[in-house]
Image 1 (cartoon, helix red, strand yellow):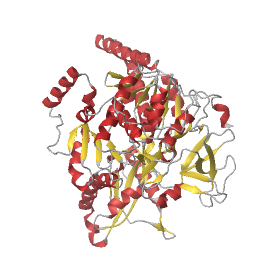
Image 2 (cartoon, rainbow, N blue to C red; image 1 turned 90 degrees about the horizontal axis):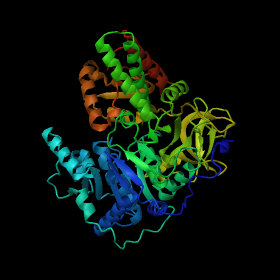
Image 3 (cartoon, rainbow, N blue to C red; image 1 turned 120 degrees about the vertical axis):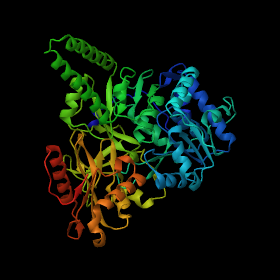
Image 4 (cartoon, rainbow, N blue to C red; image 1 turned 90 degrees about the vertical axis):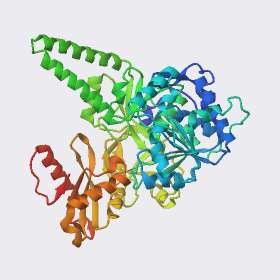
Length: 602
């Protein structure tokens, strides 16, 4: 039934048996004067972008990069994303997108497991790479700055400002580091490099998972996967059309940013308005610059709360008669009017990474006067696998599968297929599923499962139902996943770090309510110490926090730490009991009361 909500004809037909480079060059050969990228007030058209791509491919070729080589890329949203995505495709090389949230050992592992000798980074992580480069295979690091894409005069002013404020980042005194702009200039636009031939099964992109199916893993994709995903999106009722602008608020090391936002904008001849800032305010800050945005719930919640805050302040000031109040009222009314003027440019907001629940979504749509589309999927499915129709969504649904993708629920224990409307594990079938986890066949088989009848399904780990119209409703999680705003956190990862601290006997990490975001959870660690260390938990707490800060991304560091004996039931750790204790503790914080659980610390 979900096919009723797809277009009869796609907005664009794709030849799936092409590389990403040939796809984008062919699709945009008549669009060279259209803007491809907007960045910090500067626009780059398709002609300039494709010239830079050819120049970069030639520069890579001159240093020996060839088909099969893996180039690590660690960057925020800036034009080097599109340049490298297409240039490496032209050569048949593989781009590995490094998650900027990982640290230390994980960063070293990510670089070395793919034998990366060359890396492209933005200057904000130069010091991080300098610290670990001697423990990697890296022999070249090309450093780019967001300021490289400003016009020369503005660039000089920006450098002077950063120097005055002590923020100017200089290139390390290390021959392995050089400027990306100098490297790009070494290439020739008119080189005779022939684009690599298309190979359907060639591993071409590696993106790290968020850990939604366990520990974070490197996920291998093909160019066919990305092009097939675009063909599926072409059948949705999303307002994708030539010349429009998509706002990219999701970083490129997340599949939704790289594929469903950045590659999608190129595939549909649109302009990607990119921001180098990772903040909940970005979609609000750049209102009026785009027709639709690809973001996370936290972006839309910020916009919603900002408008409510202004409206409430206006209501208060309307009852005051002082001159200062009237002056302030005019200022707030002007600010509100400006927001709604900019909002009128937006045709749709797309939200992924987590669901916006029915009542919240309705309230937002009424306030914004802009439809909000829930998206659902995962890295293994090349990003979005389901999207709610713009004007035909059902409350609390995460949408319908994209055209060409099948969905069903299965019994988590037996893998038996369940009837329509019966809760089970949500599973998908598609032609653009991931190749596998790098160097991890065992974990690949857990997610990419072949059932008794020979059919292959991607197991999401989410519990839910599929109704008779094909709409998907998520009801829970079959695995112990913590969803903190747009992030998905595996408790196992945190537990492993804490268990390595000398003196820790046992550790369980659970998700507890986030006092700042109703639809979000945060990690809480319950720690049982060895008997000889039990009387000195305060000192241990500081060691544990320091260890977590060194080993984990900021969003995985436990919000709360409790010293407690870990309960067991039927020889298994009683997760539910600890979740209940954690929820009671957080509830007491929200109510401003005291909680009596022994030795709980924030």
